[in-house]
Image 1: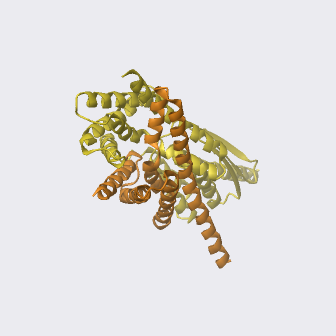
Image 2 (image 1 turned 90 degrees about the horizontal axis):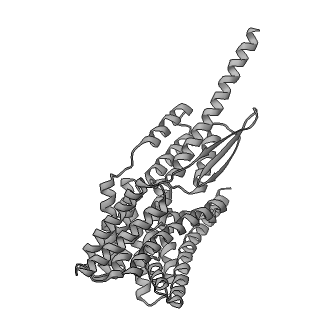
Image 3 (image 1 turned 180 degrees about the horizontal axis):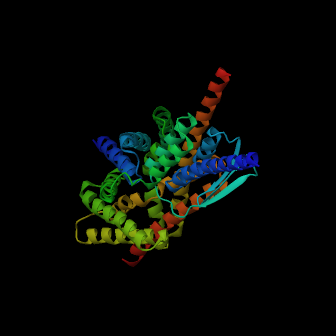
Amino acid sequence: MFEANYMDIDIEQYLEEQYDIMDVSLLAGKIMLESGAETYRVEDTMMRIAASYGIKESHSYVTPTGIMFSIETEEPTKTKLMRISDRTTDLKKVMLVNSTSRRISNGELSVPQAYRILKQIYQSDETYSLKTRLAAAAISSGCFLMMFQGGWIDFLPAVLAGGVGFASVVYFSELISIKFFAEFMASLIIGLMAFLFVQIGFGQELDKIIIGSVMPLVPGLLITNAVRDLIAGHLISGLSKGAEAFLTAFAIGSGIAVVVTFL
Amino acid sequence: MSVLVQLVTSFIAAASFGIIFNAPKESLIKCGFVGMLGWTVYYLMEAQGIDEVPSTVAAAFLIAVVSQVYAKVYKAPIIIYIVAGIIPLVPGGMAYNSMRNFVTNDYNMAITLAAKAFMISGSIAMGIVLSEVINQLMRQSRMKRIG
């Protein structure tokens, strides 16, 4: 009688631990996927973490919108599903999770420690304030203008249009959760500003100003990730990221097209 | 002089993209350097009269190789370095011109430019794939030597 009770507790504890390992892996995967890591890296990290905690076999299936993860133990196989609804770009978090997974592989962290660290990473703020990122977007617009053979006279107009364009993407995506609309509005505003600058004689070449200012909106990370995922054989993720990139490009293009057509 | 302007602006542009993507502070200089290297190769090759497609392949390849070295040395995900470098190569200008021709009903010109933009996007992918192939070949030969 006493013996049986003791066994029950033991099994419960054991089960709990298995679930903890699963939670650590899933949290690591969630942070990485939401921060813009490649699919194969997410899968690799999750399986590595599980393996270093002694799970012999684990399977993960990652798409840009959800993670499925199952671990096989002596108990029946456990599987969990996690929905990923919003994706941003935060390369620092990708790097932090990556180094945490390295530490786990080296056996430096216990399961609760790893969970606590990952939770901290998950809740941490973005590295740069919105103002800094706005300034970066504005300056890069000016630099792109120069790289695409624009004249110094158009530098300031491009900086202004690029900054306002980036700000409007941030503003509109907070207002309405449709990414397409936010990007469309931003490029529309960029087009209008560039047109206005040329009309009042503040800028000279409309095309160059627009191209430079639109660059911060270009889905560069998505394109790169889509290609890398396709190469690694993650066809579904690669194609859906490619579709997302195409949609963004289309939104930018149609915003500009409206300005070009009607003015 | 114009090359110097290109060097400085491409460095700043790539580093700024690091900030937009929330890259870690210590990697910003490296992002800028990778971007500058890629853009300089592209710019110089184009100035020699070489077509955009091979220039883009060469630049993307160089960016991917340098990023791989950085990723290995600093034990960071390669994506941090590669993204900032790739951005200047994205054929934004060409896509814009193509779109412009579409809305002004010059479909012939628009299709030509769109095809070109598509080719350049493909060559960015090509450059990244090439460097990945070389990376895996090197890893395999190292494994053989050990095993």
